[in-house]
Length: 149
Image 1 (cartoon, rainbow, N blue to C red):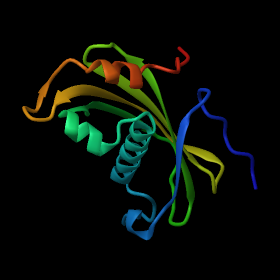
Image 2: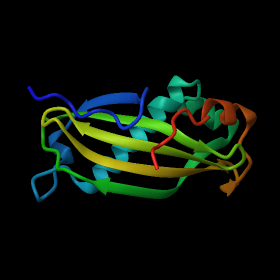
Image 3: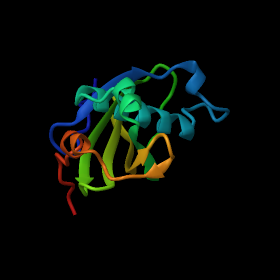
Image 4: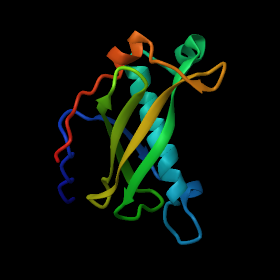
């Protein structure tokens, strides 16, 4: 087996999955929209790992909602491929916004399949309006990696 590509930054939070048949589109590879779901799954797993699972977020009535997605699709993934999805928090303004950087590696094919950034905005879940981050979010979602450039 080929050596896996290196992570773009140190100490990623990583989840692993196998591509199911349901993820495959009419072109015979993983549909672009499926990757977005994978990134969301990774972000939720990371949130839970730092003490904020979905149930706690709902109880607090505060959550981080996607504002902007910037994704670069680099290589196709196929049914049965083993996929590694990493994320790092690369920015947090301590008020409203935080950015996660994502990297998807297709371990079966030893190639980077996707890179991207997702900008999140803290929301009041009751009103649906932006709101200042609770201090707990500022700490839990602190930037832990600095991207090159």
